[in-house]
Length: 162
Image 1 (cartoon, rainbow, N blue to C red):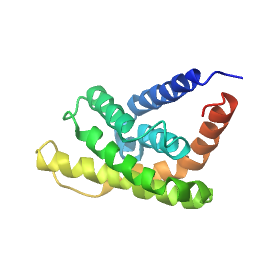
Image 2: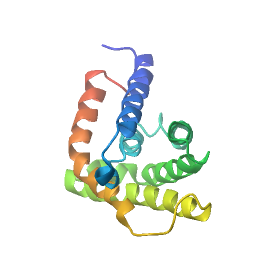
Image 3: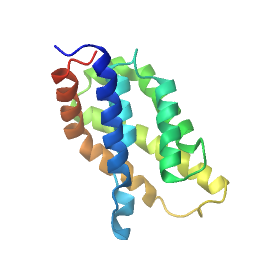
Image 4: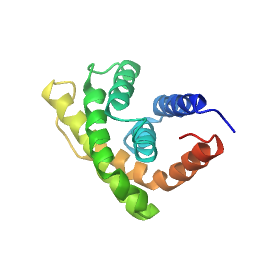
């Protein structure tokens, strides 16, 4: 049996892997289809362990993402904290949902995350207001979610993370 202290390392390592997947180069034509790996891993850990991973962890994960992307400091932190709050308030319902229903919630949560960051970028004139193509990342995240959920649950159970 793995000691409880190692559970923190599993959470951190899964987030680091999500950060790596978030910065993998994509071709220009596929940039809008990139799943939001960090947001999905964060949602999983908040849903699975709401007493260990919460709004503060989401805030720090967002700050690290801001540094990694070189974006406005606090941009991802604010949006991750918002989706963490929503996930914390719905975590018991989310656990009972089927994979298809959870994918719908991932679509909504990641869509909120992406819309919020897009609005802030438009407000700070970092990007131009344009089409809604940026939301394709939320759709691809919803498609990836059932497999990510299974892998993360197996990882959590295999290492006895509580």
